[in-house]
Image (tube, rainbow, N blue to C red):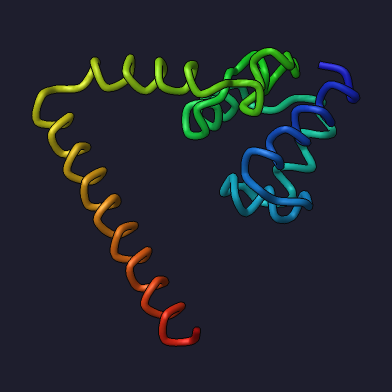
Length: 126
C-alpha cells in the first residue's frame, strides 16, 4: 500500500467513524495513538480491522480500501439499501426477524409520540 493509499484509507475510516483527527480515530478504533502511528510507518492497516469496520458501517470493503466511488456509502440509493436490508433479514431466524420487527415498531411509536409532543409545544407557544 502506498503512503498516499494509506492516507486515503485513513481518511475513509475517519469519515465512517465520524471523526476528524488521528487521536479521535485511534479512540474510535480502540487502538493506541502509537498503534495508529505504527500503521503509518509500516504503510499498512490491519485487513481484519478493515473488514470489521466495513461490516459495522455496512459499506463496501472495495470502497474502504480502494476508494471505489461506485461502492461508497453515499452512492447507494434507496433501492440498494432496501435490497441489502432484505437480504440480511432473510438470513436471520424467524425469532430474530420478529425481534427486529418489534424494535422497528417501538421506534415508530416513539417517532409518533415525538411528533405529537412537538405539535403540542407548537400549539402552546403559538
